[in-house]
Every structure is written in C-alpha cells, then in structure tokens.
Image 1 (cartoon, rainbow, N blue to C red):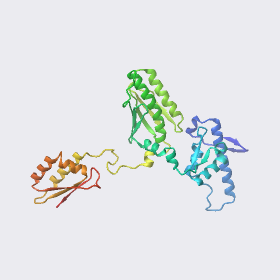
Image 2: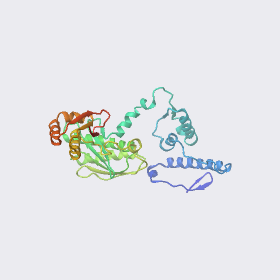
Image 3: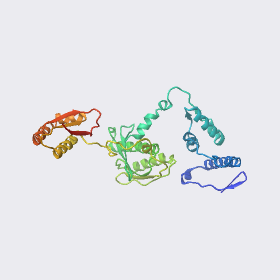
Image 4: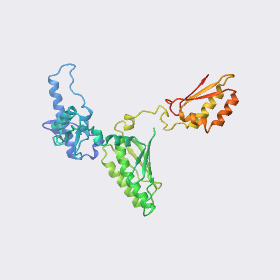
Length: 330
C-alpha cells in the first residue's frame, strides 16, 4: 500500500520490477495515480456508452514503458505521433520530454539509422561476429538452441585464446539477440569448449552482464564441462520472427526443400505408377529440374521411356518453385 496525496491505495508489483530502483517504482506510482485522477474526472461527466479509458498507441506506449534514463533521444518521424508522445512525457515523465524529438528529414528514418539492416540480422539464422566467428540460432517448438562457431577466426597466439575471445564476443551478441528477437522459454547455448576454468567464468559473467539490462526476467545455469549453458527467459509477447514472418509455403517450416535430383526421382516414380499404354507424357518443372533431366539423369529418363514404351516431353515453367512439377498426358 502507498499513501499518495492523501489517498490510500494498493499497487500490484510484477516480477519484472525486481531490479527496478525505488525512484523508478515511485515514478510509476505517480503516473498511475495521475491516470486514476483523470479517470475519476471523466467518470463524473460521462454517460452510458462513453469511453472512459483506452490504451495508448504503440509509439506512445513505447515512451511510457521503455524510455528510461539510459535512452538519450527518441526520434519520431510522424508529427502526430510525436505530439502524442511529447504530451505524455510532458505530463507524466517531464524529465524525458526534452528527449522526445520530431524528425522532419526527407530521408526515411529507418534508412538513417540502418534499422532495416538490423531487422534482417535479427531474423537471420546466422549472426556474424566481428572477430570472424558466428552464432547460429535455431528455433523449435520445445526450445531455442544457439551454437557458437569460430568460423574463419583462428587467432595468432594459441587455440585457447581464440576460443575464449570468440565465446566472449558471442556471449555479448547472444544477450543482445535474445532481446532484439524477444526469444523466450528454454534456451540452450553451445559455447566452444574451453580448457581454462577462468575463461568459462568470464564468458558466463559477460552473458549475465548483457542480460542484466534486459527487462524480461532470465535465469542462467552454470556451464557444463561440454560448454553447454541453459538459459530461461520469460516470454513477454510474441517473438520478432512470429510477428514479422510466416511459415514458408514451399518447405512448410522445415527450412529445406528437395534437391532437383530428388524431384526427378519423384517424377519417375509417379510416371511408372500411373503409366498407360500408348500414352505420352509431358514433364513441366523448374529450369533446374529440367536441366537435371537433360544432363545427369538423361540415361535414367531414356530407360524410363523404354520401360513404359512412350515418349516423354520436357517443358520449363519459370514460375514454378524448385520442388514444383506437373506430369500431364499428351
């Protein structure tokens, strides 16, 4: 319970506030109290059907929920959105109002700050590291696995130093990617095996430092002898991938498609299964599959024609995906 300006009221504090400072909690209490006062004023002069309160637009909620002392500036390229965000900050968070800026430039703001590139990186399976190594992030129904690889980075002194530097950089990158992608649930990180125990501790500390700035609560276990680390991160909303992407209509979420050679064998089996006497066939497929039939599988195609005692025509369809094909009677 808290006593604010003569009003006794209660507040629910969620686990996300575990690391919040007293000033941050007090600021949130003051904001909630002001909102409650406004609701009471609106309620007095309202009638049935009037809207008393609605949640704020996304951009304004960002100011309310995410802009803190560590944010230097918040630039908005929509004058209307900027006005709403500025008014909210001026009324509830006056110390942040001066940091809410309107961007009037002709160049798109996403281009100015390379936001599109960052989004593409946050959706990519492979994240390159400055050292030459990379991390690979795979998302499944049960868990997320993150694999750390040295790539082309071999180091100049010794292998242990190379592995340590790659893991150290990867730990910082992983903490950032978890937040950017908003990945929640069970996360298994496969760091490269290190012999030195102190190196393992430093990598673990680097990961903890990176996640300490994350508003989503996370728990980190100790690193195993195989370099495996388990992290659990609280799910706050849908991941970036689920918001921006959908299941591939070609591979249906498998992230792989059949090779051209495999498609050729599928076609051969279909013709053999449904072949009739005195009937010729036309295979309509992508250029890659037709090329395979004319070259590597030329002998197999000739044997099939001899087996069914019929001619088989080939036709390229440029609009077909690599694993799409049709077999028609002619």
